Image 1 (tube, rainbow, N blue to C red):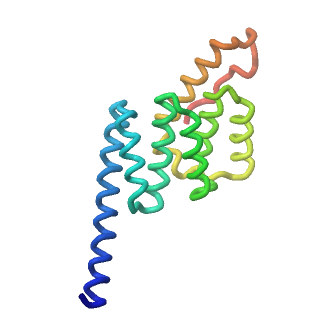
Image 2: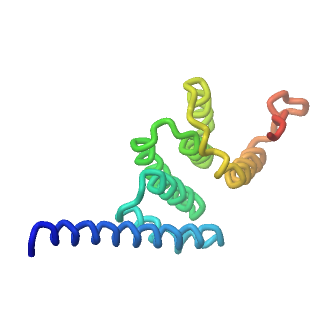
Length: 165
């Protein structure tokens, strides 16, 4: 086998791994959307072992982290978000999911600090729109859970909600 053939075979193998990783990712997204997170998790992990574009890797890590959160493994979700921060340190979606998972763990102060620092540092929010509906649901659910734990005093100014955009 010549060098050209070896290079062509190598390029073909890479395309195959990329295609397979994208297929796995598409299947994971479909399972995730249908609330089958347990089934989606191994597909996300398999896709991440393959060759994905940077944006697809970031989305896969975020969705994997979110799936782990939904099935009750917040620590594993946070581990994946930490890996995601290494690839996308200024991604607003990652910060929002980190803050949400801090709330899940009962560490509201850490979540608030993450959000405040992100706003003050000018976090990149361009990708937030794609995740907005899910994040709204998750944060509303977290707020209801927190409210059951400790109801604010009547007339508490912190209970005023911002207008939706």
